[in-house]
Amino acid sequence: MERFLSYDRLISYHRNRYDIPDFPEDKLGIAYLDEKYEQFWLHLVKLNLDLNMVKKVIKECYNQLQNGEEVYKFALQNSPLFDTIFYYMQHFKTEPEDEYKHFYDETRILASMCFKQFCRVGDVKEKLNVCKYIEEIHLSFDDEVEDVRINVYLGLLYFSQSRFGIDALVENKVLVQIIKKLTEEKSMIVLNLILMLINEILNSQDAPIISLKNEILLNLKLYINCSDLDVLENTILVYGSISICDEGKDACVKEGTIIKNFLEKLKKFNEDNSIDKEKALKILIGCVRFLMNVSILKRGKVEIFENNGIEILFSLLEGNFKDDEQLILDILQCITNTAEEPRARIALRGEKYLDKIKDFRNHQDELISEQAQICVDVITWEP
Image (cartoon, rainbow, N blue to C red; front, side):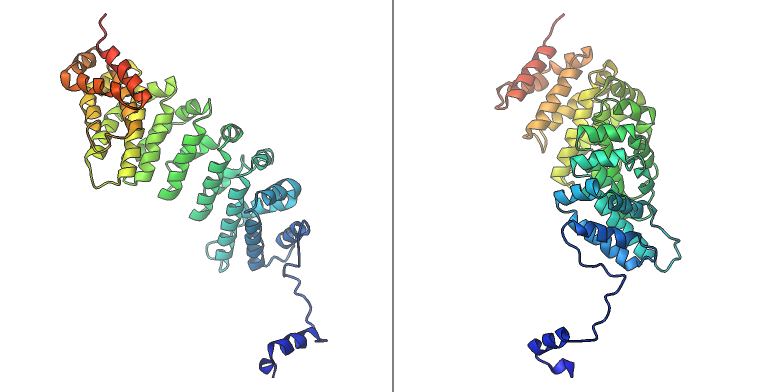
């Protein structure tokens, strides 16, 4: 008969019941303001764990962590809850044949999403470091679930967006660990995040030397011709970051094949109209910046000249991206460096080259016009 009652009578019926059922022990009680943190913690650590409830609680924690103030409270004012979430991210696993395996996997994914939020707040970054979670984060690099690895690396990318974060990643040997992962990671999505993270960490003063000692050039070579353009772009950017320091320049030039490979890429991405224009431009700028760095060395200048680099660089100034100011500036800087090689200087004095550079002296961008004049001065210099 209950289903035939009107809504107001149905509400009254339930309010006036004497046989109200007990509230289930394994359900999350009413919690609000600061009381909710204890409720979250209690439902995550009690002995008879309900797997579905654990998943729901961590999901609710993640929803709360969308607010920066909540991130602060979770991490700095409620350490037991903070610690518990990390436990579930790194250690909540079971055997492949377990019928409840999906609960374990989904819970780790949610916990890793929480980790990503923790990495967004400055004060919490220090807590992550002090509590040794950054030191132990490598435990999640091998997680069999791709989404867990994605969230962990995204979190570390947020973590690296400060000088403290970068230095902490170097001190905790995260750079060494992820360089090794370049040879082990199978997912292109995760691999791309690893390359992005490496590129961020290389902003640390000691990072380039550490990376060179851990065979980064050998590992990067696996992706120097990658068909995935995002991975290729970030591989090129990492080469560029390594080649900023003197040791990096020297190692890249001595490798023997990188300069020639990058010159071939300039030709390919300038001429292939089937490639996305925005992506092609980013790859071209990355390659030219690398060549600009290594052309500071004598051997770099020689290799660029002997591999027809001058003609390739000038073809960029007349190709599909001839109006991009950043690309023009980088090309002029690379040509200026290469012009210090005697044979290159003589070749550049030809009208088709020198006149083109002189035209850039009237460019509306002051940096380009200034660099063009420097380039002309180097080419026309007489001992």
